[in-house]
Length: 309
Image (spheres, rainbow, N blue to C red):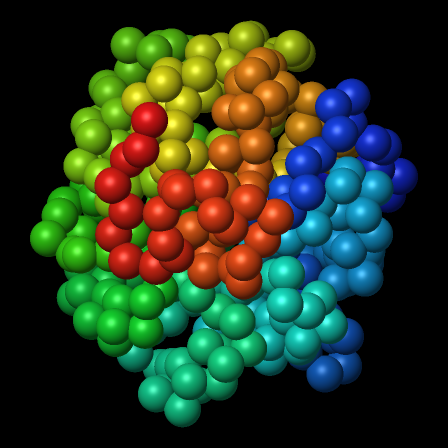
């Protein structure tokens, strides 16, 4: 297995305090290897990225909510994810990897545990079997009636090869990691323009993450900032933020997770906008219980959400 950089075990507080109810919209965890063995061909395994370590990181950052996304190291065995959600509590949701091998009983158990999304991994480096168009459609037909969102990880491919599969799906669709952008082309990149077109539809979302690691210009990541600001301008109510802790497949150096919240402050200098990204938007999408701004008039959780400026 290739050696990738390790996450910073000493997270620091961000320069701007996180608002109450702030959410990290994607983390991964690893469970006890004796109870939850990983796949022999897993692309990335970091056993000290436990749910406890994740919660400690969030506490230092002032994060009160999060979404634990199934690691490809476990395939479709969601045992570690279900246990982690029980430990993390009501402020956490899950996102699974579902295909035909996942039974209806397993889906019910996942939903009961707090899973509210299904992720399709198309990134070639993850060493998973790429979902076929037929599998994507069948999975959508099974999980959308549960109120789940769909999530696309498309790094390394042309998104136009995948996104048409969900053109007529009446569900919220999240694009991971700011989209499979080619940073050397800047905002003229056709992949970026395609994501903007999807955001105009009203049910597509984008997650602000990995801008630091994929930047072509390097610190302080001005090219990633340019992308993020356009996303926020186009669809402020359908933008999420995530650390992607423990930063799978990161070539290094891995930034401190507090630094990633500081980067969000560059993406969204306005405090009100950051609060929308960190609190209001994830509360609506992930169906969290009523939070500190539950009566702010931005809409109900679940279903297809219209953009609200």
